[in-house]
Structures are given as C-alpha cells and as structure tokens.
Amino acid sequence: MEKLGVLAALTTACFWSLAAIFFENVTHRAGPLAVNFWKVTFALFFLTISAAFGRGLPFPTDASLHAWVYLSISGLLGFVIADYFLLNAYLLIGSRTTVVFQAITPLFTAFFALIFLGERMNPLSLLGMAVVIAGILIVVLSHRKGREAANSNSPSTLKGYLFAFLSTLFQAFSMIFSKAGLGDYSAISGTQIRIITAILGFGLQALILRQGKQVFVKPLKEGKVLKFLLLGSIVGPFLGVTCSLFALQNTAAGTASTLIALTPVFIIPPSIIILKQKVKPVEIAGAAIAVCGVALFFLL
Image (cartoon, rainbow, N blue to C red; front, top):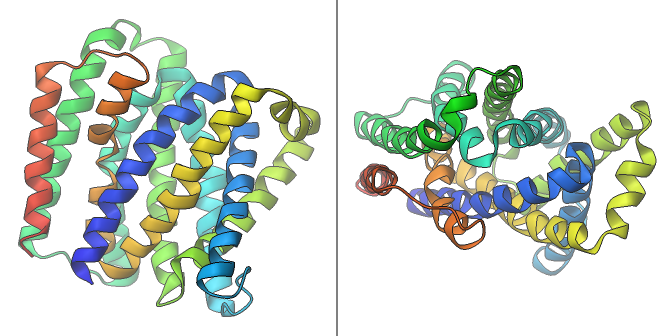
C-alpha cells in the first residue's frame, strides 16, 4: 500500500496543478470567497454521488466522533483558512509564484508529524524530499526571477508572499489533523467531512462580511465563471483532496506532502497549453531533478 500512497500523492499534484490554473482564472472574476464557497459546494455534490455508489452511504453517517472532530478541524484549517490565503495570493502574485511556497510544506508537515504523530522518515525518504524540494525551487524561482522580479518589493507583492506562506503553514497543520482523524476510514467520506465544515465556514464568512449576494448568487449568473468553478472543483477538492487523504492514509505524512508539493512542476504543461506561457530550459532542468527525487521514493 506504500506504493499506492506514493502514486496517490503524485496524482494529487497533477490534479492540483490543473486546479491552480482554473481557480486563478476565475478568482479574478468572482473573488476569493465566492470561489472558495462554490468549489467546495460543487465538490460535495460529486463526493456524495461517489460515496452513494462506492459505499452505499451518500453521507458519512458511520464516521466516529474522533473522525468528525479531527477531520472538521482539518477542513477548517485546510479549506477555510489556508485556501483564503492561497486564493488571495493568486490574485497578488499569481499561481506560478504562489506555489513556490508549497515547496516548504513538506518541511513543516514532516516536522509536525514528528512532534504530534511520532513519524520518522528514513534516510532515503529524507534524501528524496531534499532532491524534490531542490527541483521545485529551481522551477519556481527561475520563473519568478524573470517576469515577476521587478515588482518583488511592492507592498502588494510582499503581502502576496505573506499570504502564500500562511497558506503553506495552515495546509501543513491540516494534513496532520487529516492523518490523525482518518485512520482506516474511507478517504471519500473523510473528504466529505472536511468539505461540509468548509461550506459552513465559507457561508458564515460571507454572511459576516455581508457578501451574500456576491458569493451565493452572482457567480451562478456568469457562464464562464460557472464553467471554471465546476472544472476546478472536480480536479481540486473532489479528486485532488480525496487522493491526498488516500496518500496520507497509506504513507508517511512527510512523504505524501513532498510529492503533493510537485504541483509547481506539474503546472508547467497546463501553463503552456492553457496560459500560453513560455518555459525556460532551467525550469525543465528543475523538473527533471524533482522527478529524480520522486524516483527515490519508489526505491523504498
């Protein structure tokens, strides 16, 4: 099952790279809060159908109190808090620069897993983590050095860096609570619990900020916004998050987090195809290094 966990983590990175493209596009049109609310709402619909056919239970009514508490906290940290900072970072510095901070998520995750879960990564895993992170940093820093470096000291850019960092920190905490709460429970139903918490959190946030119409109604009236929300919700909180929980369930939190952090590498092809961006040779080299690091995890 260890190898399946590794594959699930890699699949998560693929899905999240597509989600980053879709959500960056639609966030400029609908706003971060509206995107956050509808992406998890649509995802819950798809998860409910999957659970009904796959488990015979459309909702996680068989989950223990322990699972509900830990996975709800995970949903609050990962969706409501981390994604708030993530989507605002997309607006301020773009998805390609924001994901540079995802490269340090494995470090936080492995550290928190050691403290709270007692998980220790073996030397080969640590080497694989280092190589993967090095490759990711080469990819994203080479991109930032070119087009975006000129504005790196502007207030909005610095704020974007702070938001991206906070997103990374809360995402690491979220993964620890997910692993602690999931146990051997269904990854699909576990994702449902996290998303139910997220829907309540985003809905309450919209009401408190008096953005009800902008969040609940306006996005549904724009066809292009609705299209990207649906696509993003499928590859992000539906398929991506479910795969991430399966990965956490079957491999060490540090390992899963490292491979999921490959999003900046996997985001290169859709950036070329969808956003028509050019890729530098050094980015290809960084991607190759990251892939070599991934290979080390398959030698475990």
